Length: 239
Image (tube, rainbow, N blue to C red; front, side, top):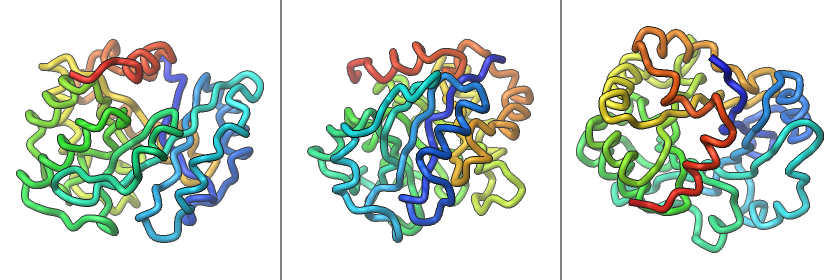
């Protein structure tokens, strides 16, 4: 499978990552990626940048050589009603946003509460990707999540970091297979992301490939094969 993009990564700006923006771009070029997306953590996560950081993306070259760069954010879902930690005037400054559940910002709830939190976040028109939805610390109803992703034209993420042996997320591999079964049934697309916190991991999706093979997941539902696929989904009007 042609895999030419990576849309979830963090630089030193996030506070617990170890490479600069220039180093991440260089790694993307070295890996022959066509598109990368940098998504610093939004302000509610301890140690990350101030909201003002996201208001000055106009100074960044989005075509630094033979690669395209998009600037976004990984925003935090703060409650079970899908409230985010980033105001609309900041979300408007982004090329796209990922919404994720992090235990520093929201305690795991019941399956119903976690599911509602994800679906309510998807209703926000600035959210284009749900980050690591298969984290077993936050059990969800995957049928409902996948059907909502289809309704709101949101991509569900397969997060390589979640499947690494040293990952602190639980049951992600098993849950990914459940999610992919519903995605296949409902014809919902997924995105493969590294969640890189250092330049050596940019474009690293190696653990995901095994899961896709095990799920017998159709390549046409993986957006990483085409920059146009990602941009098309990002541009779609919400259902």
